Length: 193
Ligand SMILES: Nc1nc2c(ncn2[C@@H]2O[C@H](COP(=O)(O)OP(=O)(O)OP(=O)(O)O)[C@@H](O)[C@H]2O)c(=O)[nH]1
Ligand SMILES: [Mg+2]
Image (cartoon, rainbow, N blue to C red; front, side):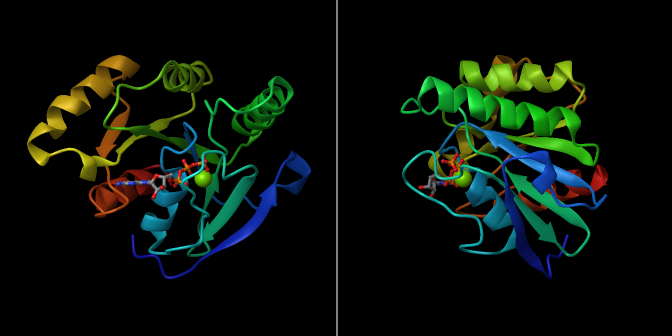
C-alpha cells in the first residue's frame, strides 16, 4: 500500500476515548522494546511519528494512528518489562484486555517478536490469548537485519515452533532498519481489510 497520509489521532486509556469510527483497525502487540513503534514508523515511512526509545516502556497508552483516512494502527504498550509494579501491570492488563476483546473494528493483531530469540513465555501467552478469543494474528519477526540472511529460515522455524503457530496464521520476516518484509506485511494487512 502506498501511504499518502498518516497522523496520530488520540492516545487513549479507556474505551470512551477510542475514536468513534468503524474503520478497520490493526493493533500492535509485543514485548516491551521489541520494535512495535519502529514497525509503525517503517510501515508509514515516518521517522518520528510513533515514539521510539532505547528505554523499554516508552509507549504507555493506546495510540491510534489514522492511515490514508481508511484504517487505524493502534500502538499498544509492550509487556514483559521488569521494572513495572504489580498494580501498574494489572492496570496494563485490564486496558489491553478491554481493548482486544471489545473493539469490534479490530481486524487483526500484529504480534511482533524478536527474530533473534525464541519467543518468550509472555509472547506465547499473548498468542494463546489471541487464539482463545479468535482474534486473527499476523506475526512479525523483526530485527532480521541483526541475523545473517543465510540463517533467517532457521531462526524463523524456531519462532514458529515456539509459538506453535497455526497454519492459518501468517508470519513475516521484518526489519525496521532495512524495510525487509514491508510489502508482504502490507499485503497481509490489506487482505484483512
Ligand atoms: N536493528 C534493529 N533495531 C530495531 C528494529 N526495530 C526496532 N529496533 C530498535 O529497538 C529499540 C526499541 O524500539 P521501539 O520501536 O521503541 O520498541 P517498542 O516495542 O515500541 O517499545 P515499547 O514502546 O517500550 O514497548 C529501539 O532502539 C529501536 O531502534 C529493527 O528492525 N532492527
Ligand atoms: Mg513503543
